[in-house]
Length: 280
Image (cartoon, rainbow, N blue to C red):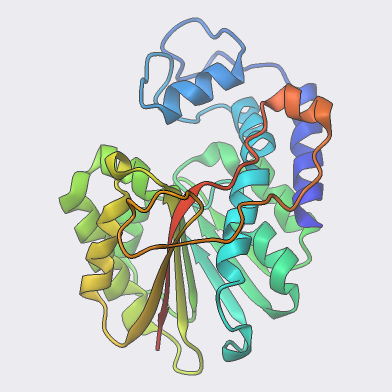
């Protein structure tokens, strides 16, 4: 499986390289504790660093989060009728370590037509090259690309899947609700309006299930679209995510080695909120 190939690569790469502190964005002397740095970013403290500009940190990130992000997308993919799609041409916005591709690889590999991931962080390049080498699919990546600018300056053709995974929560802090509203406008203008006519367009938003991190801004996208169906899904038993349905289980699909879990403090509980849209 692709997830095993990439996690094994990142684990080995993590062990083989030293922290490069010459160009590190860590605001203090690096403590060489990747968990501490990731938590500082994800909990929006930004006392140590404000971005992921460290190759070793990204290796740790993939090892820590792929076993959570991949199955969350797998659950979403199991909600759709795959027979309605001739193939999947996938455009993830802010692709990171391509956990979404790992999910497609496991659920519907025979229908993957192409995958084009864009991300602003060029430190992903080493991992992206490995994914291209081992995936067996038509995979390309572009880094050092700002998603917002990319949407405003391109008419994006021939894709029928948009994945937005753990990006809304970042944008909510950086550009606020008005910025996210414009982001959705740009998606409709540059991608959805150019959709293929031989297939529905699938949009999956997967992010933090918390009203304070932008979860409820996805309703703006629902209000802006035409001729579509949608479902809102959650793993939590709480029903604060309006009009959402809870999955029957949040069981993880993987058996994870105990020592590996301890090494990377592996996140393995599916607990996101999702919006799954099919545009006709």
